[in-house]
Length: 45
Image 1 (cartoon, rainbow, N blue to C red):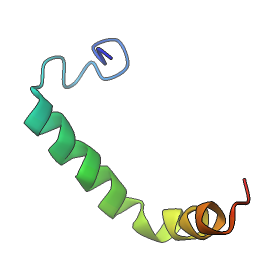
Image 2: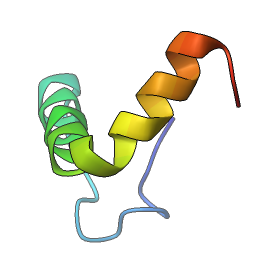
Image 3: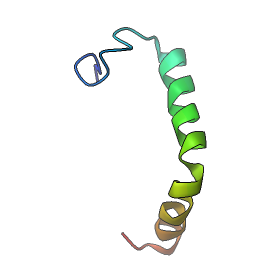
Image 4: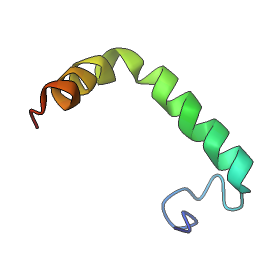
């Protein structure tokens, strides 16, 4: 799951840093993702 080509600005991260960025991305997208979360809970795409 190397993201070097996908994320050239963060070419090397350890698992902890990747997890932290992933959590941050979720927080930033929480409003937009809220509807997606509802869909996931109700089993809709």
